[in-house]
Amino acid sequence: QVRLVESGGGLVRAGGSLRLSCAASEGAFSINAMGWYRQAPGKQRELVASITSGGSTNYADSVKGRFTISRDDAKNAVYLQMNSLKPEDTANYYCNAAINQRGFTWAYWGQGTQVTVSS
Image (cartoon, rainbow, N blue to C red; front, side, top):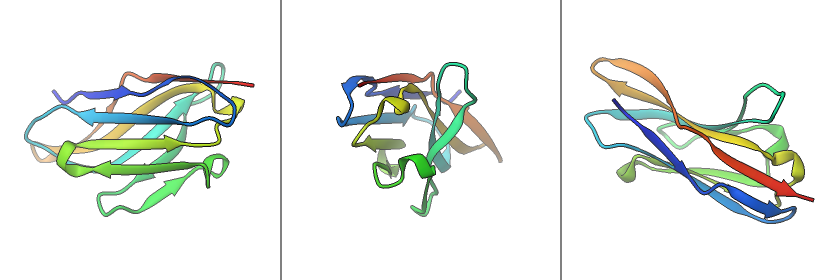
């Protein structure tokens, strides 16, 4: 069973920065796309940013120019650098990975890490 472990959330003032990390547990698998989603109270989970195995990235309009997604395949890890944070970025952030294992592709989720931006 693959596990995704997130870290890096916390409380920050508006205008500040945070860096989220997510690493997959070791095992016999390869990773396709990876991404970060967020869910604020009372709202649906939404895609924040994604990155393919080839390094192509995609961002939600609300974070373009402020957030940067990257990955380190040697560490089975994905990162989200968040700059110029706004109170509306407050949410629980989830890591997602499409993992190839035993001939199939499975979607895995992390447990979530809380990001709170104060005004």
